[in-house]
Image 1 (cartoon, rainbow, N blue to C red):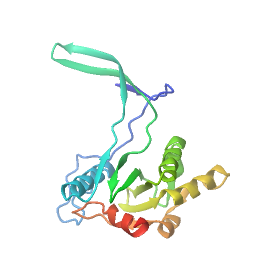
Image 2: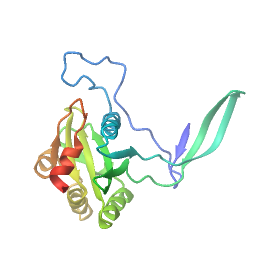
Image 3: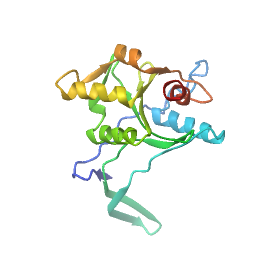
Image 4: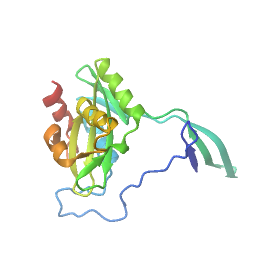
Length: 201
């Protein structure tokens, strides 16, 4: 199926970790094969079940333009377009505050490429903060399962550095010094509310 952005460019599904390999039972991280999105969805379900926060993944509006019907009881979408550019992955409410955040993974070992963000995502998070909301990103280094909670204001500084001709990535050393490290657990899987408490509340 071909899905296209509003500008006509074809959408390419990001590569995800293989789910075919069984998890190691003797590992502390028994769900190591899960993607960052899986982990955050599981975390959000945990927070919701305990009435700690209401956070959901944003649906992506898609316009279907071509459908094949190989059988009367089956339909196969062959071509579709995003109705508008996506903003961020998640939004919700915590302690009366609107929160909005993006989740990103990288296979790089020592730095996070800023090309993983789109300009409209940066603009969106900036607007959220200008209106009193909380915007941030959760970054995972896939090879080591290292996680960082990065406030948007700090991310924006790195973005502006790139716009001014500087480095096009954030080194892991820089992240360690200006963000909150998150540790994978079980309940919740990614305890990002703890980081929010420490930074914003």
